[in-house]
Image (cartoon, rainbow, N blue to C red; front, side):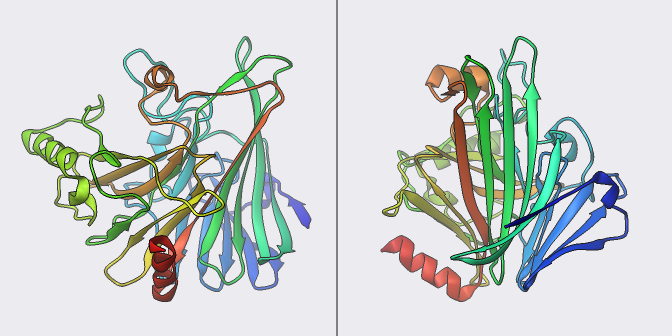
Length: 358
C-alpha cells in the first residue's frame, strides 16, 4: 500500500490527474465555491469526494446512472452545517450528536461531523484479495475544553471494475479517562427513482417496517399528509414501491426492525428500478443496530434514502438518550463502521435478489 499525502495547494479549478493505479485513477479539482474535490474513477463510473469537508461524497454515478439526490445546490459550499449545502450523495452524521434536535437539544442538525474541516487528507493505492483499489483517507481531531476529545478517520474505497464502494468511519476517544457519547449514522441520499421497488430482509408489516407518526418541528403537515402517515402506519406495504405522489412531500420516515442477515451478520437492501438495475446497501447489524428510511419528493429536493445504517434513531440527543440509543465509547476505545454502497446492473441485481431471498 502506498499513501499520497495531499495539500490544499494541489487543487485548482482545472481538474488535474493525481494518481493512477491499474484501471483506477484519481483527479483533483476545486469547485468555484472554493471546496476541494477528488474524483475517483474506474471503468464503470466515478465518485466525487470532498476530502476537507467532512469527507462527504458529493456525487456518485455509475453505469450511466446518477445515484445522487436532487437538490438546489449546484456545487458544495464550505459551511458549518449540512443544511446549508444539502445536496450530497452521502455524509457522516454524528458523532457526538445525531439527527434533528428536539425541543430541549442544542446541537446542530446531524451533529458536528458532516461539514467538519478535516485536518489531513490523502489517497491510498493498494491491492488485496478483491483486486486493486484507490482509497481516500483523512483525519479530524475534535477537542472541546471541558467536553469531548476524539479523532475521526473516515475513508472511501473504490475498486477496479466495480460499481460498489465502501464508506467507512473509525472514531477513537482520545480522553485520558472519560467516556464519550457516540451517535453515528451513515447518511446515504440515493436518488428517488419513480416506480422503484424497495427490497429488504424484513416484511413490510407494522411491527417490522415502522412508520414514524410523530411530526418533527421542521415538517409542516397538512391533512392529506397526516392521513397518509396514518395509512402507512397501519399498512407499510404501501411504501414498498416508491411513487413521488404518494404523500412524500413533506417527508416520510420509517424504522426497520430485526432485519435478516447472512452468516457474517450483514444485511442487504436494494431499491430495484423499473429499468431492472438497482441501488444497493450492505452493512453489519451489530455495528449498526438501527436502520432508518427517509423518503422525500418535494419540488426542490427529492431523495430515497432507503437504508440509513445507524447506531441510533434520528430524533435528537435527548430523545435517543431516553430510549437508550446513545452509545458510550470508553477512553482509548475505537469504534469502526463500514457500509458497502453502489449500483447493480441487471445481472448483479438478479444475483443479489436471489441471495436475499435465499
